[in-house]
Amino acid sequence: MNFLITLIANMAGIWLASVLVSGITLPTSDDLGQSLLTLAIIGFVFTLLNMIVRPLLKALTFPIYILTFGLFALVVNALIFLLTGWVTHQVGFGMEVTGFWAALFGGLITAVVSSIVAGALASVKD
Image 1 (cartoon, rainbow, N blue to C red):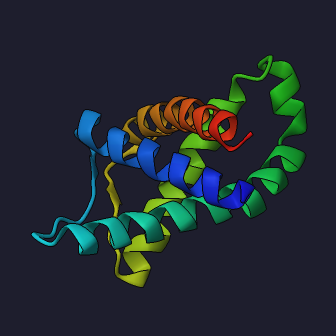
Image 2: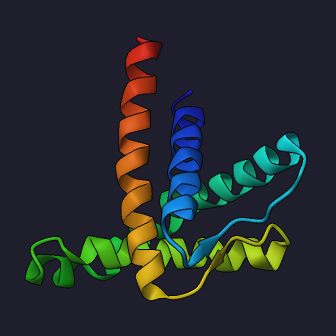
């Protein structure tokens, strides 16, 4: 159940980031179901990368986290966002992220929105 809540929260964050940041584009479709499926796959890839790659990056860059008082987490978040764009583009579900700054702002928006949505869904679940 927690994975599903995280997936829905990440989908909402990625969608809002694509609306607000000009360097992030999602594939468009006239069919709402197709658009939601594409967004779900992109959210799934983002969630998996957050669960698998982020802990490895945090462990490898632990000294940089200490030196920057945790601000390096923004860079790691941007890297995960860029990696999500690359993976989904390779698989054919083409989220495009056109640069580091777009990834940084997109990752920041996604993190904030996903925290709010996950908190709201978790409170409804209880």
